[in-house]
Length: 70
Picture 1 (cartoon, rainbow, N blue to C red):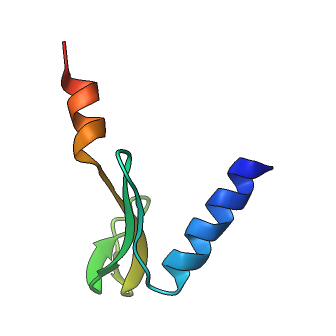
Picture 2 (cartoon, rainbow, N blue to C red):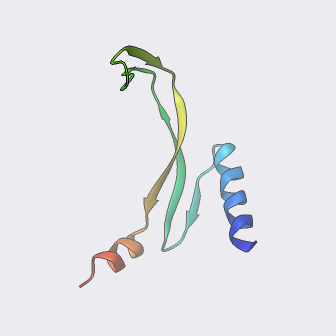
């Protein structure tokens, strides 16, 4: 229940366009993907893909150091 509450708060902040940082772990933000021409993998037909907002996560320095220490 606690984890779901935390995730709900992060989701709510991201939907408002805010950035969420968890010290030592990483930061969540949103990025906008521009519209582009894609391809339907089943038919090979070109399709227009609209612009969209997607979540983005960047690991914190401490997390990267712990993962890469040997």
